[in-house]
Length: 120
Ligand SMILES: [Zn+2]
Image 1 (cartoon, protein in one colour):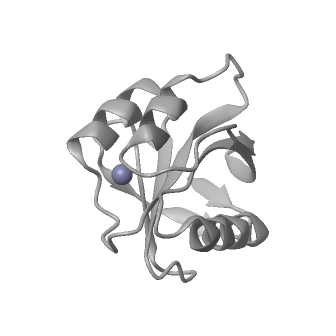
Image 2 (cartoon, rainbow, N blue to C red; image 1 turned 90 degrees about the vertical axis):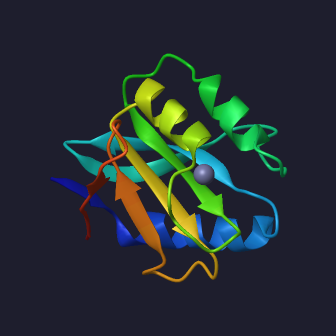
């Protein structure tokens, strides 16, 4: 069972709001299945799917367990490109959707199946 620190989720929502209407993307770092940090990538902030390209430039770092990105459109449903990226990077992926409130997000595993993440 994955868990995420409330402060981290809050930071994700704030970052997504600042990036809006563009996408926001980052990696998730975890210890003992608790996501405690996001890793921002240089140059990820822009529209048109470039967030995904940058996420694929993943450094080799085994504390990175997955990804998070925003959907300014408002639906936290993975696209085809998202599913491809999920299958390559880690096993926990969060999509946050406009208006980026603490409950406007969903999480998926590497197969794109919805999973539960407990906020702690
Ligand atoms: Zn997406």
